[in-house]
Image: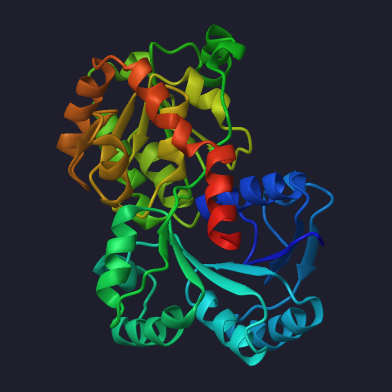
Length: 365
């Protein structure tokens, strides 16, 4: 039997959660002897260097999403893939039409990593009615829809005019982590300047991450002089955040590291991971913190945190965009003992091996 061909189509392989999840999956599938074509609007991104060299990368060199139609249509006809997986609306809708015009060669799966709430529509300047119309025109006829959280699946069922039986919920994957292989004392000294209270924030620095609220709360933390907040990630809000730190004279306690490829050593050295988003479909960073047995303080944003943390009480959940709640949450989370046994039971479902199998079962069942 010939090796199955899988197309994965997305804008780029930058430092976000969707891109990191894609990296984990394609590297696992190539080991299982699938033929992987990674098709990028632009061949760029921090994770490109981490791809298995056997993965075939195709650079569309497109700066506009609509311009991906013809090259993807031609590629589908030329290579005749068994499966096409595309991420991120509206790219998903454009690829749908390329698939239709190629006479539905292979199965098409559309994956969503975004929460369809009013804040998301506002931030990305998306017309909600246009979105719902395009969603129903395209998603209804795809081979399947993959959602990274149960609540995203519920939202899609509300958006679609007709019920679909092929909407699947599959979590974002994380790689296996053995905390015992890290010298915690060494990393606390090296990464957090040997501070007594080590705080960590990870993610793209944009308004929806609301890192400014973390800084406002941290500024008033009673043990500030014995604390250090390390922020991993880049983005459009970085300069504003750095200016806030400087103007409030807390630069001795806050460090911006930019994009960091290997984040696990930071999780294992941190006393507390802070997830501060206003909305987030399924934060990969939260799952990484959970896998590393790091204490977690998270905002109750739609949708992922409550779905992951609340049922098994794996972290402290607070209101979004509330510096006073955040400040109180610091103490509560730091004084909460991590239930390692419960985390071990939960975190296995997020490991790459298990998530990869779920995708392949959906693709080829």
